Length: 369
Image 1 (cartoon, rainbow, N blue to C red):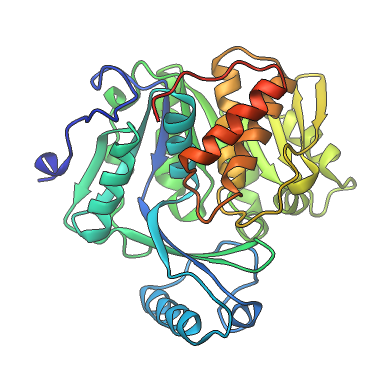
Image 2: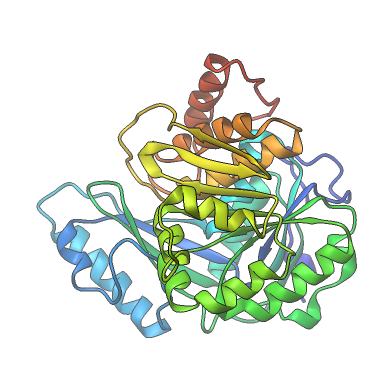
């Protein structure tokens, strides 16, 4: 029923032939829209879960949380901006960034609802030239996530996907993956069946798999199935932030980001641990590099920093660049998104990133913004 819902490629389509297989695919078991708000620290103590992480909430909790956020904004003595709503989620941020800022042919596989949020998601992604022909539109609700950004630029995420439109493992087809080079996946125990099915089909079609560890809470609560996924040998590239890496090493005799890339390197060709303002450390086989953060800007909002880093790193791999160059590009890309609110990079901040490329002696992507 969703075919007529999918917009035709527009003049903003950066992916070339819309029917050609995207170079990089993102798996979206349940597409999300993000409701992003800057808040005072006081509100974080009143919501479920630990500040700084990402963990699912029920539909009623999401409704109450949005209501509380809007009340908080309107009654705050500080000049807080209204809630900003965009297509969201980690994989979405990575794929949109690759298409918009790097000119890489990208697409998404998954599902969204036939509702207002779903229409917003489709419009936002197609505007940036992301191929959405593999996205099933269902007569259900689109997932939503509240993203709270504190005065330090740190974000607390509360997604609601329990009742969201989702793609099922049996709906995935080999044609969805045929001809592509990479599949981008975010770890989630709640979507593990479709994640495993997508990885299986992708591997049969010769794709490489990039896995993001999602959040320290997800790693902490569901570490065993994560290790099983890593031990399968199907993950080629793994991204973790410092907190996720610490949870992954919980109970081990070693600790620290260096140990984390060593552990991940046992399972993956490439392993990356991002270190926030301290840059990143990455491993490819026996090679290990550390790269500082680029452009020491105070973060307005850290939402999407790791996702855009992943996009930059993947761009480097697709272009055959060295491990260090991939890290530098990732750091520039991650640095571009923290300069404003939300996981969507503005044209001005892409230009900032390209300037960093020139400073570092790296080629600037040819992209129509």
